[in-house]
Image (cartoon, rainbow, N blue to C red):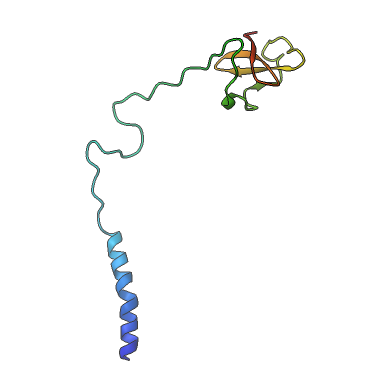
Length: 109
């Protein structure tokens, strides 16, 4: 009986300690501590400026994704790209880009 009581106590004490720690109150954040969400009375950070590349510049890798490549150039009232080129749209601007090295040949329609 003494062994059973010791085993029961050994199992019950950690369970009791774990359950009482869940009831402990967490300290409230101070006035300058982050609580989640946007900071009060502060405007959101400004958006990044739209990209702009000139003729002869290479389009950065982050803009070489399919979401920027314009396959339906007619829908955007663009001229058909010559063989070996394609249109890229970013930041409200259109760029005629060489397929092989992503260098801008022309800016705009």
